[in-house]
Every structure is written in structure tokens, then in C-alpha cells.
Image 1 (tube, rainbow, N blue to C red):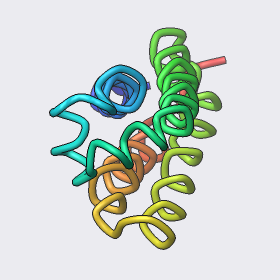
Image 2 (spheres, helix red, strand yellow):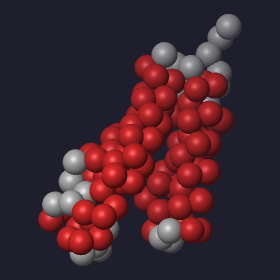
Image 3 (cartoon, helix red, strand yellow):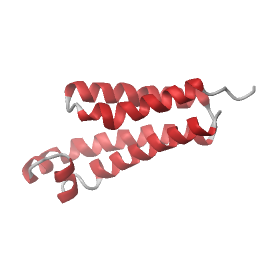
Length: 121
């Protein structure tokens, strides 16, 4: 697998670790409220849901990192597809910018993995 493809997968994983931090630990603070344009009241009311969402982002990051570190093409394809699907869904149902922040990087990484030569069996 090419270094570019694996590097892009790691970059997408790092983005999802960032999302995890925002959603699980910074949601109710000033950074989370500013990033997600929330009132303090809404942030408090939705904190448990955001933490759950952050946990899922962590699972996606773990799968992406596992695939990249193990040089496992199938893992990288599966988890980048998950990123793209979640990003498209989020962009269509929650906020259009999710398409650019999540789906687009995932799609670029997916295309790089698909274009890279598979490792020899």
C-alpha cells in the first residue's frame, strides 16, 4: 500500500480524534459552544448525545489507524467508506459543512487507497 494512501487514512483518523475531543470533552465549554454555535443551555442539554457521537468517532479513528498501521487495505476501505457515509448523512441532515469537514477528506483517502497497489499476498 502506498505511503500517500496510508498517510491520508491517518490524517482522517486524526480528524476523527479531534471530533472525539470536541464532542466528548469540549462540548459544554467555550470552545465547543463556539465551534458548534450553541448556547450554554443547549450544550448542557445535548452533552450526553454529543459524547456518544464522539465515542463513535473514536471507534472510526481506531479502525482507520488499525488499517493504516497493519497495512490492511480492506480495513482502510471499510472505515473510509464509513466516514464518507456518515459525512454525507450528516451533511444532508445536520449541517452542510460536514460534507467538507468529514466526507471530503474521507473520500480523498478512500480514492487514494483504491488507487494504490494492494500489498503482495
